[in-house]
Structures are given as structure tokens and as C-alpha cells.
Image (cartoon, rainbow over all chains, first blue to last red; front, side):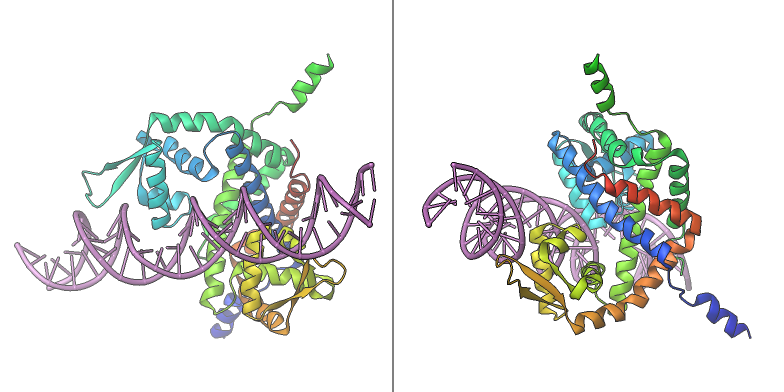
Length: 160
Length: 160
DNA sequence: AATAAGTAGTTGCATGTGCAATTATTCCAT
DNA sequence: ATGGAATAATTGCACATGCAACTACTTATT
């Protein structure tokens, strides 16, 4: 009897049409919007979206610094991918690596003043992109439902 | 007077905290879910997610065929990117190119029986991934709001 | 009809990103 | 204390993907 219950609980029920449609819109909309907004940033002579994502995590972190692995998690990038992205940002002077005296394996990425400037320059363009492509189409209620749903989804990434 | 009105209408208002939070969750959740589901497909010996996306457009098209440029639009990929993706799928036998007698510049991508089989094999894995990572966290109402919102967003990609 | 402009698809090149292996360091069990 | 497992970051390699240039063909203009 218990075996049966377990089987039913772990059985994979397929998404219905409604949810499947939501999923497909999710994928397509994401690709379309990222593409559009990134182009707008680059066209305006600002840093690209992925650079922005990294720098904004730093500006929000205490002391404007994060360990590289924390940064990799936050921007959903592999360690190696992050290493090279940080290389570029460091070469551009937007952040610098600082060795960590408490753990000599690792480094902090620390936002520089130039990095802060780059964020300040890009923000109006990015904000306009988010507003015009995305936010303008969502009522407050919809944005609330949207956020709540995505938060639930993110919280259980390994749930099977 | 009219000049003033135009300026106000085209002014870029920034997204509020609620909408900004929704946007950031949108980006992070997308990256996380695509990563998880693609791994599950590959681990199960199925075609990767991007291949699936292409083939599913074909299976839904009339005669199981689409012009390459139509396919590029549907999967939000550049022309050159699509050319090479179609190369791989054709080499794997999952689709074939067919010249179009009505316009000799272009080709159709046509789903093969093997392509159909690959879809059938991958679907249970993909469906389970969508269900477990995504759909299970959305009530019907939430899914409805979600879809409606994304549809609005997608309809106006160039609205500024 | 002839020519120019536009479109479909492909290719060279540059860039971005993940995996597996590597190095340096830290943590843990004894 | 010491050796083995785990972790942080980097690097070599392979692969994916966009842009610009190109070829082949179609459409529009005259």
C-alpha cells in the first residue's frame, strides 16, 4: 500500500495546455527581451547587459565586494565563465580582484569607482528598456503575481 | 503645446521596485530552469533543449515544414545561427532541407520520421521538467495571468 | 527588358561559455 | 600533526552563436 502511494507521488504528471503555453511564452519572451535591451545598451555606448548584472550585484553587496563563487551563483554563470568575465571587467577597470587574507584560495571582486560610473551611465538606458518592453505591460497586480510565482519556482530548483 | 505633450509621452519613466523585482526574477529564473531542464534531457540521452525547440516548431507546422527564416524567427535565433543548427539536425537525420520550387533562394526544413521519434522520446523528460520545475508552482489562475502578461509583452517588442 | 534594391541562406571571423583537468589552499578524520 | 577529501579559481579545449560579407535569386522601378 505504501509503495503505491510513493509511486503516485513521484509520478511525473504532464503540464496541461495552460501551463505549457505559459512555459513557451516564458522562453520566447525572455530571448526577445534580452536581445532588445542588450542592443539598446550597446547602441547607447553602455556596458552590455551581462556586465551590468555582475556590477549591480557588487554595488548591492556590503563593502561593494563579493567572492567570485558568490558572484557566479548570483548571475547563474559557471566558475570558468565568471573567471573570464571578471578578467574583462578588470581589464576595463570596472572592478578589481583583491586577495582574501582569510582564505588564500579565493579572491574578492570589488567594484571600482569607474565600475560605479558605468552602472550610473547604463541605468537610465536599462531602466527605460525594462519599463518600455516589460513593466509597461504589467499592472501592479500582475507584477505581484508574476514575482510570487517566480519566487516559488526559484526556491525549489531541485524538487523532483 | 503639442511639443510638450509629445515630450511627456515619450519620456522614459523608470520601473518601480515591484516591477524591477519581477524583471530580475524573470532573468534569474529563466537561466536556472533552462540549465536544469537541459541537463535532464541530456542526462536521459535525449536531444538538447534547443534542438527540441526547433523540431517542435516543425511538428506543429502544416506539412511538418517551415522556411528557414520562419524557423529562425520562431526560435529567436539569428539566420547564421539557424543555418548551423539546421546543419547539425540534418546531419543527425532529424530533419532535411528541401528546395522550394516557388523561390529558389530558399529552403524548407522538413521534419523526418527520425526527428519525430526524437521528439517523442524527449517529450516525457521535457514534460516532467516543465511540470516539476515550473508548472507545479503555478495555480491555474497564476498561469493564466502569467501567459496573458507575457503575451502582451511579446506583442509590442518595438514599442518605445 | 534592364538595372537597382531587397531578400534567403551560407561562410569567415570573433567572442562567449561550459566541462574537465590543474594548482593552490583549507577542512576533516584519525 | 598528517594524509586525504573538498573547495576556489584558472586554463585548455570544444562548441555555440552573432555580425558582416558574400552568393544566388526575386522584386520593384524605370
